[in-house]
Length: 277
Image 1 (spheres, one colour):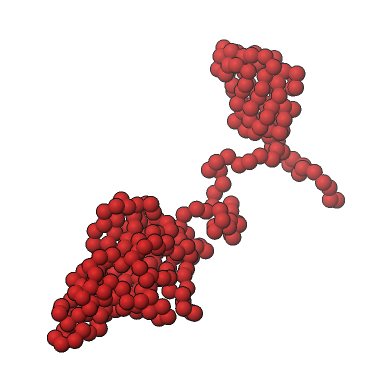
Image 2 (image 1 turned 60 degrees about the vertical axis):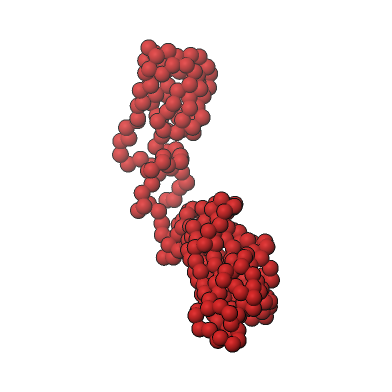
């Protein structure tokens, strides 16, 4: 016949005793949580104490109405421990006790998750691209600071939180390792062999140094300017988004040498891809 309630014991059950001798003051700490003061028998110097009037219990803390000293003989007998419901102690639940798919890793676990466990394999996905919209830095050896836009022709796009650009200075959205690729279309004056576009980085938001370079190549038409293309790339370790930034500069640019741009298709581009944390 079915019934409601705790299962009937089919064997002898030993009650647990905890020795608290040496405790002092008005509180005692139990080894096991209990529902209330009626779930333990508290003895002080072999005299059983009356629940509520002599003590109360909250989880594992016994609050005494009086004070005990370190020389008092104190112990408790757990009366209802076998039928209580309590939170498992830290480290007590093994892997075998967790059902398959019981934990939502994407919301309950921090850090980088492997793809096999439902993660992306990287901490933050980000890809962004900018381009030159018009002829830029004609005969100028210096920063590329104007005619820059995010690539926005139909079919193009940005993944994640993109870069921030201000007057040619590019700031990163988060820390991590980034791959920076720059593809440059040059017009090269007939008076020079090579024109350069350089990637520079700062780690203190002040001084910049060149870490990669793209050049136009050395094919020269001695009578006329000519077009050329160069590509450069580098990994950038962004440890601080306030201080680590990049920019692009030109060098060896005679009059008539420039970067070619277009606001409808990619000619000279700056691409940023975050690879991981």
